[in-house]
Length: 160
Image (cartoon, rainbow, N blue to C red):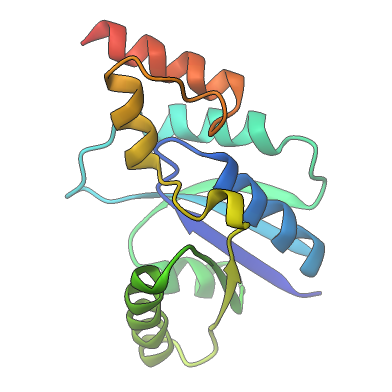
């Protein structure tokens, strides 16, 4: 059985994330979508809210498990006996950062391989930051995130 992990902040999850998760789930027996917590980051949504949105968006994929984790990704892979890390790439700038992370992970835990999946061209510009920025100015985001995510983001913005 080959298990993979798709880590991210998913703040919020976008159609780009969902595309990568669906494609990765077809390649591996089990896919762990892990909502990462980084104490140094300021998130729009709590980890619980992010997990809830990810669960709703990926509920139709039977071999996906959703969890959260705070710490080094390689600690998670070792603890859960996972050898493959999935990362989505949008552009050359993503590759530079992701290559650096993949090499660091390999240095710390030699048994971990990183598999890069190119994003679908229709999502090549899309990021959670862009979605939040457009939403904060009242712009349309329904083409970039599922309805449940758009609703939760709108509620967050209205509370501010």
